[in-house]
Image (cartoon, rainbow, N blue to C red; front, side, top):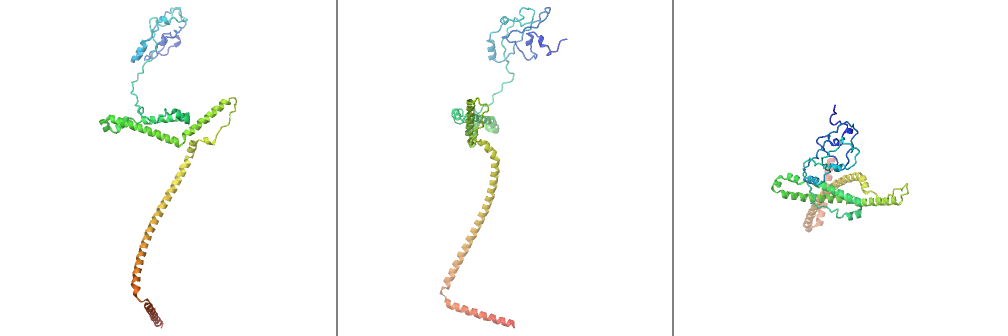
Length: 346
């Protein structure tokens, strides 16, 4: 009973059968530069098994691949037989075909469809020339700073490439139908401006947190450690950490203190709002009092003017006679009042 396909014992396969694919969709050819595999010991009475020729390699549609493969010199069977094999004298053993031409293995082309390459909008966009200043940047701030700036540039490119000309045309379909080239130019200019702006803001953040100097100090510490390790290779115990105040990680310190800064900022802002409201009320009160004072000053000025008029009118009258008359009148009035009191008491 024959074994089902795929369950054969590979130890009893002939060299030619070893190259038969288990999957009919995959075709392989035996390597031309290797010796034939020695056949297993079989009975001399066993007739020679028919030699199966290796199928041809999978054809490809690439003209360059066909031209390169056709220019190769095929390896004939008689050339392959020049190698010594243990079973070369036994004619009944199975082996590779004597009439076939074995070519070098060719890799089949992928069956996937040729996809259009993704748009590369940033090839023509000129941002910050980091590569031109590579020696200056690396010499001034170290290798870690240069790597950081390269990472920032790659991140900026990736962010700018997410917005394509197709997105702009979909936002303005009418204008895109009228003049597609003008929309492409607008998109390119906007992408360039966006990338330059992102790089500028990134550089501002780097300088604000003093990243260049911090990375430079880290490079210096690493170099000092490497130099010490080279000079003291015999010292197995090493040395204690050389920590100095001038290399305190300012970014880590700022990140740790940010919650405290936020809390203090919120408290000061609330106090500022209360003080601003109190100042506003006091200012309105001062304005109201100033208006009332101006009104009072106006009334006093009018009274002074009336008093001056009265004084000017009474300037020609005899003042002494009027005073005597007023005294006599007041005395008479007092006498009349006393008489009335006496009469009422009786």
